[in-house]
Every structure is written in C-alpha cells, then in structure tokens.
View 1 (cartoon, rainbow, N blue to C red):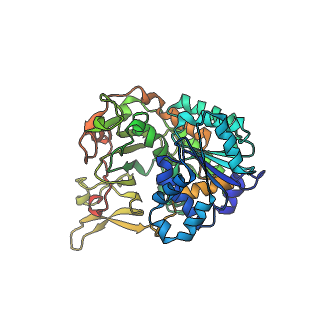
View 2: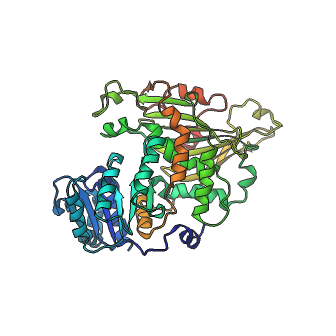
View 3: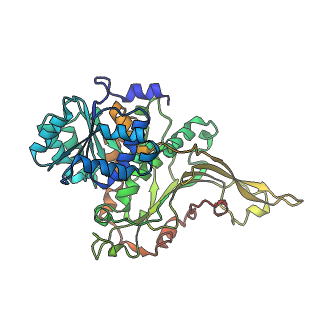
Length: 477
C-alpha cells in the first residue's frame, strides 16, 4: 500500500490541513500518559506548528498546563529543550464546564480565527454528546474534524447512538475513531507480512491451518482505574476492538486495489463473517483482589480476563477455530499470534507419532520485542531419523518506534483516515459480542501471576493447548 495511493483515497480533498488542535480532557490521565509525549514527538518531527488548545474543567491555569506537560514528557524536555520550548509556545488553555456555552465562546476567542480545527475528545464517552453540542452551538464544528477515543460505545445500541451524535455535527470523512493499536508498527506489519510474501497465500486457509491463537497479556492490574474498568471489562476494553482488529488483518482477503479504503472494506467483510459469540464460547475470569481496588463494587462480576473461541464463517476460514485470550495480572506483558498448521497427512517418521511436540506454526510476537518465527522440525545428527522442532526467527525491531498516538494525531491533522476505524466495522464487531455482554457465566477468580482460570484451558482443549508468550524460545518449541 503506497503512501500516495492510500492518502489519495482516504484523505479529505475539500479542505487543507487543520490549523489548530484542540484536546478536551487536557488535565486527564490520557493527556498525561499519551497526548503530551506524542505532541512533543510531532513538534520534533516538524508535524505540529499550529495552536494547541487544552480544554478541561479543573480550575487550572496555562502555567499549570505547562507544568503538567513537563511532568508528562519527563527527561525528554531536558534532552531536547528547543522542541519542548516550541511545544509550550503553541499551548493555550481554556478552563470551563463543558455544559456551559461560555466555555465554547472562550474557546472560539482563544482559537483566534482558526477556521479548520481538529477537536480530540479525550474524555469519557458519556461527555461526547455534551461537547459535540457545545461545539455545534458555537459553530466550531464547521470545516472541523473530530477525533474520538475508544471505547466506541459499550454495546451495539450505544455505538449506534454515538455515531448518531457525531454524524449530527460532522460529515463521515471528518470523524476519526482512534484506536492506538492501529498506529503501532507491529500491527501494520501483520498486514504487510500477509500480502508482501507470496509464500504465505498457498497455506493461509482452512486446508493448511488448524487453529489461530491471539494473546494480549498484561502483568499489571487496573492501576487505579477501577471505576473505569467497572464500566468496561476485558471483552469491551480489549477483545472487541484491539483483538478483533488483529484478527481482521490476519483473516481478510486481499484488498481489491492499493488503498486503505480497500483494506477497510476487506476488514468489514471479516467482521460480518464472524459468528456471534454464545456463552459457551467465552470464559471470563477476575484476578483475586480486584474487588478490593478503589472504585470497584464489592460484589463485582466484571471480567479482568477473557478467553474466547471465535469462528469466521467465510470460504477461507470455515471450520478453523480462532482462540483469543487477554487479561490483567498475567505472568508477562506481551502480545503474540500463533498460527498452528495441520500435521502432515502421513507420519513417515516414528518420532513424530507421539504428538509430544505441537505441529509446525508461525508466530508473530508483537511485543515486547517484535519477532516473526517459523517452527519446523529438523533432523538430529545420527543414523536414526529422529528430530526436534526449532524456530527460524527474524526480529523486526527497528529501534525506537514513533509513538502510535503521534502517528495517528498527525494523520488526523492532515485528514488522513487510513489508520482509523470506521462506523461500519465498529457496529459489525459489536454484533459479534453483543449477546455475551449480558448472557454469560460468572467471572471465575484466578491467582495473580497465573494464566487465568483453568476453564480457559478446557475451552481450547478440543483442538490444541495455549502457547504462553515468553521471551524464552524454549517455551515455544
């Protein structure tokens, strides 16, 4: 997918680049962890030279926002003082209640004639409607773009309502639904690997592949965000968006042309082919001690772990199970895909008969260290025809990766929709999980530092066993 092609097909052509960047929720956790470091990267890369206006209801001043920016970027402010000084020179601040029209009047004044702002709603979804209404009332939606943070609703009904709110004020090509996973280099490499290598296509189907596993593991808990997690849970927070996006890139058909519009269409086809989940397809877990977290109900049934069996009813994938697993307080922080191939139709060598080693597989490690590995059996030296499985691996790490948010926010300022999710795919994904959001078995307690409840092993047992991500190759063989 060449840059020229995907930008030609995905970028708005009726307006130039944005002439201001406004981010609501400027004093919040997302701004501190992600937005300020990304803005500094954009300044360093020469991709940000327009006013940057933070908006919040915190009683702060511009000096307070400057202090938060320094706290957020840490040592980067000292290692590149010139870039940090430029970022501070771009910063503006508006403090006020989102429900008060005077807040948006003040925003208009601070924008000082900017006519094509990009508005980033780094705020809870419950406030989206309030802010969109305020922007519309002040005329700040005209010739503007809006960026909304996941989750895009909390079920199918709310996702449809969210789109109604956004569409009431902005045209479709001005709505940017941001999922930082799609801005990661490793995720884009899944797409590249699929369609840049001719050796993949002949084996990438139900005839050669036995099953696919996707694991996104975290070795920490909710980190003080218990109240948020009570409204989300692992299925909403990770499975329905991040993991489904990974599945779509792995399962999609070849795009019809060079362009990300074609990629979007191919991904939507995968979501529509996914069989809706039932309660028998899902194992929910909750790490021990979760109910003691601040903001968590003492009788909470929210899942901090989810294992899912997914079926894609397409010609390519009919009958191939996809197993997805994510959780908090697991043994490691990592993301990995394992594509397990079917065994040879005839076992010619005795050492392959006992099934002690899993079949050949292709492994994509997305984090912590990106790697692509192919597991194949090789003969052990000697007279006997005996062997063992070894991984042939290539590290895809290329040094320090540009922050995903910096990539995505730069694209939004340019009007490039390439790496943003679209309404149709979001609603199709919600249709897959919608039933199990309410119809499910209770969450099963699991010890911190384990791989979740034992029932997750039973879910996958009919076809294979879980491959636990690790930086130690021995555990993969």
